[in-house]
Image 1 (cartoon, one colour):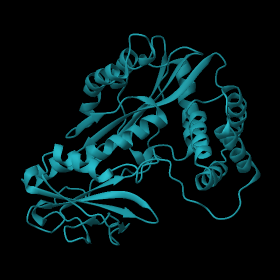
Image 2 (image 1 turned 30 degrees about the vertical axis):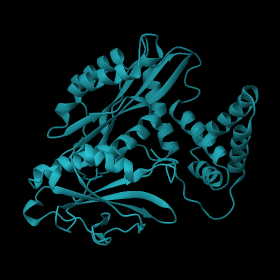
Image 3 (image 1 turned 90 degrees about the vertical axis):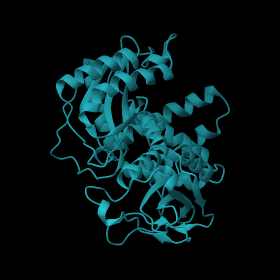
Image 4 (image 1 turned 180 degrees about the vertical axis):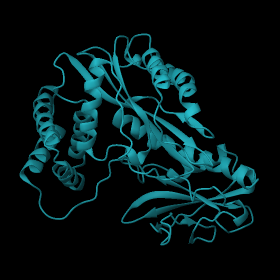
Length: 389
């Protein structure tokens, strides 16, 4: 769940100006006492904007700060996310929080986005409460495994969904998701699925297991991978899975975005090994930056050693404030070498963000320093999606 913004032209409205002023004041605060002053007023203003479903005002304020005040932008983005996922006003004596449990998956076949049967929900509830949530926390689960296309779009829609989930968590009841109106799921070899839930606990009490004295994130994750994975794996047949720690909605989505990048490379190497009978040592990986006004992402084109045709590709998007300060090509190369790919070529010059005019797939760097469409050999294209997500 990334935060880069696209600057819009023209002025901003009065409510957006107020958000900008409050966020800038919070960023410039020099004490916790002053912080509380700004935070209280900023939270109230954001709550009012979310309740009126004024997405444009939130985006206008974020755009303004992104262009002119990075610390203010970070404060506003953090506060919007916080007020979106922890719905205000539902219960005076309880804290409530929308959470997500991402699942990374890859498969040569379609990765399901599917309704969760009651028996699976019951088992997931047991393991979440035993290994992830604090003692006494109440839980509500959504009975659907969402694809990225099916998540609530925008802060206001997420707040509406969170309100439904958090209200159910106060009663410890699960939420049925009506699937008829959900968007179609795009088909990728590697993608993420999201189990969404909400947790409630008496105000001031712990929500998560790692907030308790004998808990830790590492132990919670290892237990969730073993126990939650056993529950969800049968619903994702033919998929290789990796589980991300369940936590607050936006933090979990960002963790999934970050984890999906090396996961997609590992999935790509494994896929090419089986689809083309090509072990990692017989592959060449070509890494290059792709930019508009600044570098937006790196793309990795895969060829067979000794050949120039790009047979597959992976996009490695830059997240948050990643840029020149992060040596992304070296990070990608490290993952490739861990996968067994020894032939790695890095182009330093930037390529434009080009996509195929016919199918919309990204164009990938070739060994000759050009961009090319990734094309599997004709004898290996059956049931294979175009590219890795």
